Amino acid sequence: MNLGQNAMKELHWLIDMVQTLEVGLVVLDKDYQVHLWNGFMENHSGVSLAQMKHHNLFEVMPDLPQDWLKSKMETVFLLKNRAFTSWEQRPYVFEFKNYRPITGQSEFMYQNMTIFPLTSLTGEVNHIGLIIYDVSDMAINKLQLKQANLQLQKLSRTDDLTGLNNRRFWSERLQHEYDRFTRYGGACSLVLFDVDHFKRVNDTLGHDAGDYVLAELGKLVQRNLRETDVAGRYGGEEFAVILEGTDADSALYYTERLRKLIAQLALEYQGESLTVTVSLGIAQLDSSMDSTNHWVQAADRAMYQAKRLGRNCSQVHPSINKA
Ligand SMILES: Nc1nc2c(ncn2[C@@H]2O[C@H](COP(=O)(O)OP(=O)(O)OP(=O)(O)O)[C@@H](O)[C@H]2O)c(=O)[nH]1
Image 1 (cartoon, protein in one colour):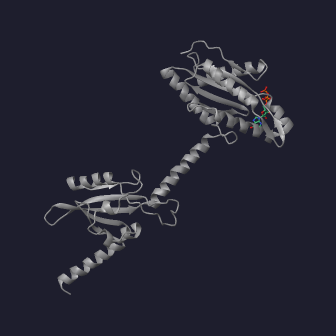
Image 2 (cartoon, helix red, strand yellow; image 1 turned 90 degrees about the horizontal axis):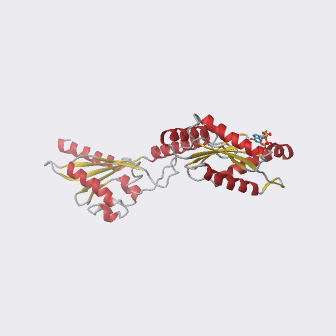
Image 3 (cartoon, helix red, strand yellow; image 1 turned 180 degrees about the vertical axis):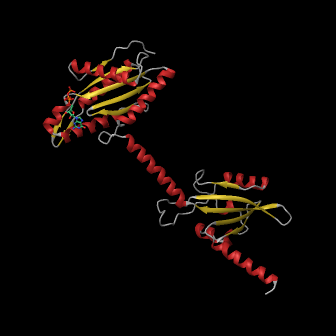
């Protein structure tokens, strides 16, 4: 076999490999006419090389992100440098279906892409090459991991029974609000409330009925929160809400609304109807409070005052010097 035949054979092999490679290969000229469109591109797009060759890429595939892709390609022609795109910027360039069995969760194929200049024998760049990588497995794994972490984070912050923040996470938020106040001032109120005679619910209807009441109260509190309010289960039948940007007068408005909603809540447990009331204490953060403990104690005192006054009412802790 002579040198020419050898070169032909190697070229033939190379073309075969390009056809069967599990990545997309495309060659375009400056008018975006297609010169190479390998087997991967044919199989996934359903458009054959014959249909593609010497046609404008964007005319055959009108759904491509034309402006974005052209600006990337023009940069490669101009600077003669490689350009990369990642699925994290844009999930895909070519809208191909995802057929992989393990990653069947995604309808489309996630892609990374490299665009690189192809230099002619005379040193000019009149063509560019595109390599399209199927990164669905990696992308889906990463997205699922992110989702699982978010779920885990949410679980670690949530009280199982009421769906509100658990005490640990809620206390962190309280500290955050306290620190913010010491730096910037402003109004912030803390509400503590406790179910009245809750022991009776447990004693007469059972602990499960008590749990059911707490869960329903959790839902009601959640439904009546502003975006910036932070509600938590403080302890057994005690709840706590941080009202950011709210002075004691406005907090009183909130607690009275909540109190009435709770008193009107028609609950039913295993055919038994029941109603509950709550006693609420409010403490607006002021500069005399040197820690979150101090702040909580103030709200707690106001709540016990409400209990003493006959329950089913709100009381405000008298403030010394509001910021
Ligand atoms: N079902 C249920 N009961 C709880 C839970 N946590 C605390 N409790 C009960 O809540 C009751 C609280 O009772 P007390 O502190 O005596 O107060 P109370 O009966 O609510 O009366 P006042 O607060 O004085 O109005 C106790 O019986 C606790 O066992 C819980 O997660 N589920």
